[in-house]
Length: 91
Image (cartoon, rainbow, N blue to C red):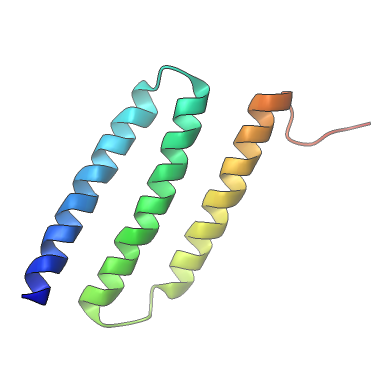
């Protein structure tokens, strides 16, 4: 029963990733694309967590940590660029 729930969850998250990719590509504004990329990062973290549960291992925990750090830094950098026009301020 638990395996069936894992399979269903993986399928739902896979469909969600495809829909988020479409939203990121077709986003009407830059802010929507940034939000789509952040959502893809969070969904990928959940997908990797489900794969870890499915395989009964902790081998992917470093990848999850790296993905979460990159998603956060990327979202902050893109938002700062959208707001100010530059990521690094030079005075």
